[in-house]
Amino acid sequence: SCFLRHARSRNYVSESEVCKLESVPLDFGDYHPLKPITVTESKTKKMNRKGSTSSTSSSSSSSMMDPLSSVLDGTDPLSLFAAAADPVTTTATMDSTRKKRDKDDSSAVGNDFEPWSSKRGEILARYTTTEKLSIVSGSFSRKATTTGSAVSEKVRTRLEELDDLEEGSQKELLNLTQQDYMNRIEELNQSLKDAWSSDQKVKALKIVIQCSKLLSDTTVIQFYPSKFVLITDILDTFGKLVYERILSMCVDNRLSLPDNFSPESVNDTAKETCLNWFFKIASIRELIPRFYVEAAILKCNKFLSKMGISECLPRLTSMIRGIGDPLVAVYARAYLCRVGMEVAPQLKESLNKNFFDFLLTFKQIHGDTVQNQLVVQCVEIPLYLTLYSPAIDWILQCIAYRAPEVLLTEMMERCKKLGNNALLLNSVMSAFRAEFIAARSMDFIGMIKECDESGFPKHLLFRSLGLNLALADPPENDRHQILNEAWKVITKLKNPQDYINCAEVWVEYTCRHFTKREVNTVLADVIKHMTPDRAFEDAYPQLQSIIQKVISYIYDFSLLFSVEKFLPFLDMFQKESVRVEVCKCIMESFIKHQQESTKDPVILNALLHVCKTMHDSV
Image (cartoon, rainbow, N blue to C red; front, side):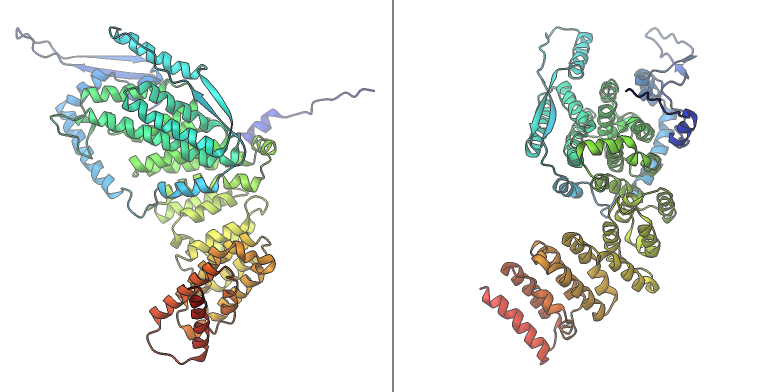
């Protein structure tokens, strides 16, 4: 027998309305690569040798602008330099540059901003894999050219070399371990430096393009954050090399440019070289390498135009919309924020648009395409969502830095409107100021309760909240309720590691705001969870941290040793070396805070026990 199958009826119009992205107006000023422009050239011919002069003439033309010319704002290099030489324009530009520099100085990144370098090691240690990896390796042989070849031939050869990389002059290395992969990336980084030092600039660019392409590969998805860290290190190296190369060309009479130089003080040769780099990058066909390589040399726009960076950031932000994979896209946004904060921290508007663009595409994370990819790779959705945390945390940290409270409130409200927003909520609590979070603790607890448990674990949300409350105090009337709500969730955790990671954070909040009765209750709960199956043996660092927090807040030792569960808590330190370290901490605290002699038998007995442990280890 046979069965006839009929395609289900579909309403494509209604489906399109449901699935399409929310449209948001973006202000690009007058920029659009396909927009017809009108160029007005003012030509003033100088007096020739015979003394004859010619009048000033002007001409206008309307033409379709090609994408490569967009970097020049519709002018050719000679017109650009001529305009820069105009005294009226120069004076006006210097005034505006001075005002802009004053503004920049007031909004520069300070020491209170946590740099990307401090997060690098943590990401590499956390996001690892045992699966086999692959990497595409190019054949970077330098083609011989004759010394007498024309300039046009040299340019053609360089373009052909770039095309070679994109048209198959590469081989794929398969079945690499994580360490092999990292070693290969380090080799490419060294190859980049070697190529640059031997004046093989095209080879250097090819290496960077190859590395950038690797960021479109998510075949081993749990390793992606670490891959991003490794490859953006290479991009940072490339961006620094290009910038320093152009800067060295600006040296005139052995005088280098000041830190806050204006484009008018850059010579024509340096500008031409800078434009050449941007044109080379604009010719890269694939979106992801083109985006990353241009972002890497974003700072070089300073050589061309005082508005160059502010015009490029919105364009690069819009380019990310063309990246289909939401994980790849969010890390591209993180890199743009990272570069933006380094070269133009005052341009917060572009960073805000970057994040709001991400919010519009947030629902893609829970779409069918992503779900199918996770099924193929056998990755659970909670693990997948944690891959986003480093990127979103960084984006929000950049936006929240010295941001007004109105903006933070608006962003929090936008996150509220999104369904299944535990991932965003966790990043908000990680990135925003602790005072802002603490003042709205009950609001955050309400949002945590509404989150879907299957997506992002609630205990991680409470841990992030606890970290903020260790730094800033919530409203006094809410303190007891906050502890009750948090501990209800923490005490139900079955996994000892999940439990102790949360309990360690909330012990400090308890010691900070409550009496010995609440501290005793928390310590008793920790003993209850960590004693079965000797779970405490895998949690010595967290248990040590708990002891240090308790003795840093309760330094009256008659009060400390009257906490019933304090000494039983010490009994969990079965490993001698760890036990001795804990006893040292207790004695150091006693020597520091006990100013008067004591005859309290409770203190004497407890300290004798502590000192005996230290003595026996000698």
